[in-house]
Image (cartoon, rainbow, N blue to C red; front, top):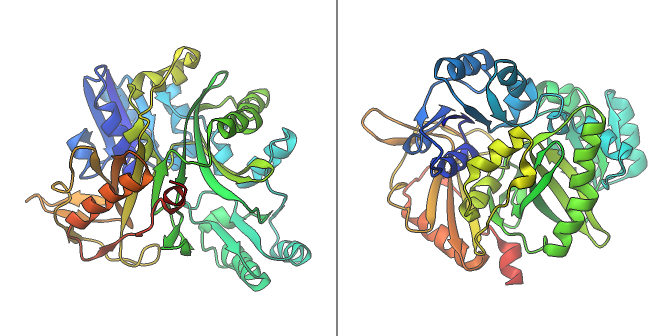
Length: 424
């Protein structure tokens, strides 16, 4: 098969790494890819938002199957465009990707289908949002409705912080058009976890649980980021909890989307708050998480590609996946200053040499000079991922690899996996 992966981040590197191992693959391309992905696939310089260019490339190169990594092209309808062109693809249609593209849609959907989530209000008027916030009190959560690269959420500890978040999103356009409408939610308590499942519109196949770290600093301090690290499995998602998540959240979602004419085919990534009363949905993503995907792909022992094809073909009921019982942990190395302003073009030394058996350095924001020098061009740049008997061992191996990388212009959190390590 001739396969195209769309995207340029650590998630797409992990997907290319897994797919390239499939005996079904004759040729693997990635658009636009990055310096690390170039080891696994032929990178083609087509941006993820150039839907015309991506469809034209798939046609000209006789691509058999396209795997769409990031949320932007999914929400924009790339899978619809590919399907119309007769090209098979993995990922939801634009109508189904609304689960990620609009937080307001998802909250209303959960209310219609009795899926447990936080109490909320949705607003297009800032004054109305502020009145609601004053009525509810703090702490409270303010979210931009649309896509905001994982950063459009403010967990406000005080009323002043919440009111300022409304102004930042709606008046100052901190997240562009994503903040034209906002959602204000009840602050939920418990332990956060991520849960992934494949869905073909009818059947649902659970993958695995994970936990990520959104805050930029050790001890879960500082602003939210796209993710500073992750690990799988998540101890809080044991077998009994996974069954509840499937029965109370994932399965009703797939059934509800079908009933509303938005049949969901792809991967459902449920961000969850797990408290004394069980799991509640924080938000949905319509694609693999980043950096959770890096940890999941390290643990996956089965061929990924047939499972993705089965999703597209509606044959997921015939798929069974095997997982490594060991833990995987990913440490994200980011550019100094991230998630704020950061320098681009700084040189990284030793990334390839840092890899050992059971440790992979997945690339996100990287490029190579013609002479082979590796440079950082993004905020989140490397995802150093290792396997271990448990999270503590996986963490030791991942941080040992981090310490072999010489990048003075980068940093990482030093406590990825602390919840799991505390339980071990």
